[in-house]
Image 1 (cartoon, rainbow, N blue to C red):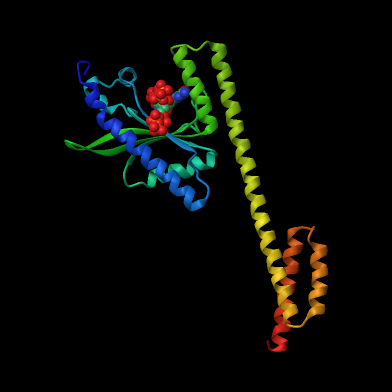
Image 2 (image 1 turned 180 degrees about the vertical axis):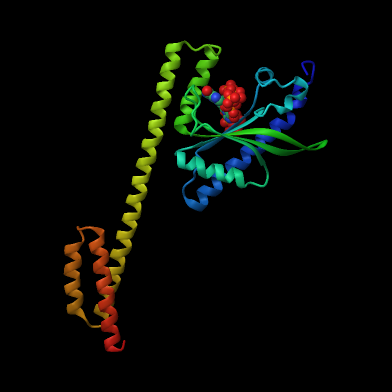
Length: 265
Ligand code: 0O2
Ligand code: 0O2
């Protein structure tokens, strides 16, 4: 394989990375349009450098004439804002019909000793070549922005120190990984609070709309005094808890029904 034509060997991998980037970015666009919120922040991809492929094959004890068994010659990376988004994206990957998941590695639950966190899929992906279909392996890594920030810096330091990061730096990187874990947790909690606040806001605005609609119906039906009494109570309740407002809305609804039934309207 050393004497082999690497350029030709890598053509289908380049094609796979380009195709997968298009497909995963399309998934991002689709989810953004449909749900006004996308679990995918951005997608990158690369074909491994020949020197790294040879190194990796050696580490994995893969003979060079079977180098296609190196699982991450084609690599895709999906970045998410929140850990919760990673699970949603992972489910999309599992459900796809254009690739088959052959392996999953959860380094989010089981952090590596270095501090590395990420979710990895090895997928088998068919590319159409001039010589027919070729099934090849690709690695899809799913990360939060915080995980990616840490991994990118750790990776470049590893490169700088050629894998021999001094013990004190390594220790600080483990600490930084812990900080990145806390950052992800904090962001998830803030997100949760925003979601709860949004739901509360929506419930309140729907309830207020309902009350105002029913007060109008009471006036149209000639029950001006009843409407006015309820309006005063609505005014007094507005600053109170949402439960009180919902109770008042139910009371108005009931009274309206009774009055409309009684008057035969
Ligand atoms: P190095 O040496 O790692 O920095 P485009 O699709 O045109 O918008 P392009 O040029 O194809 O963009 O690049 P893309 O897809 O935005 O990102 C390529 C870079 O992302 C690579 O940089 C890698 O750093 C990184 N990357 C993306 N996916 C992976 C992956 O699965 N594994 C690894 N190791 N890196 C990944 P370089 O400069 O090619 O390489
Ligand atoms: P590159 O330059 O990113 O392409 P094992 O160690 O046995 O569990 P292995 O073979 O390391 O398994 O595969 P794994 O764990 O699935 O990881 C493959 C890729 O994950 C790596 O590719 C990195 O991109 C990333 N990765 C894994 N561990 C670390 C880490 O500690 N730090 C960082 N920054 N990235 C990591 P490569 O081949 O290292 O290179």
